[in-house]
Image (cartoon, rainbow over all chains, first blue to last red; front, side):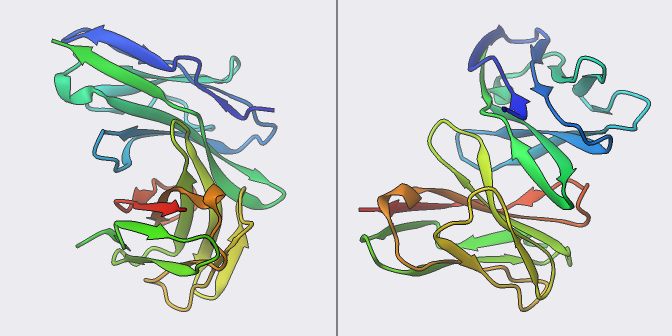
Length: 116
Length: 112
């Protein structure tokens, strides 16, 4: 079963608009963490934001916020006031503990293109 | 701080050859990871380490070996290269298992 699902392979958004990138996850572990990473065309992986399963409030980091809906098992990334430099691949990832072996599982990514 | 460094940046191997991908971090992180990223896909964990002398398998360990003799270094060894190992390899490190992971720039490996 897919542990992390990103259903939007590609998105096009007008500059300065807000954008929501979807991520749903599946785990039976009550303790887990959710991450979003950005991968520009240059290839490096850049950490954006983290949400722990016990965190009471949604995480925010500058223009990035995470819309965490625990009951629906979704952790969508919201980028406000999008910029041309936001064009990149975005990966959602989850850390959970499976039989004591903690690991990070990545989704297949969403390619975001910002249109001037 | 250089962060996480990886060498080489690019490499072409013939089938059956061996090589070691180097990874070094200068952040004194205990946790280190190796991932591979196939075209159009997310990252898959190959091996990880929770400290010097301790390593464990990830999701796709077959065909690879690792060692962790120091906190700083976490080399990945390919013994008998196969075309299926053509991929981009990322090394990462983190302060804790739940903390953000810092990634190196990646090594693009082609096996022909």
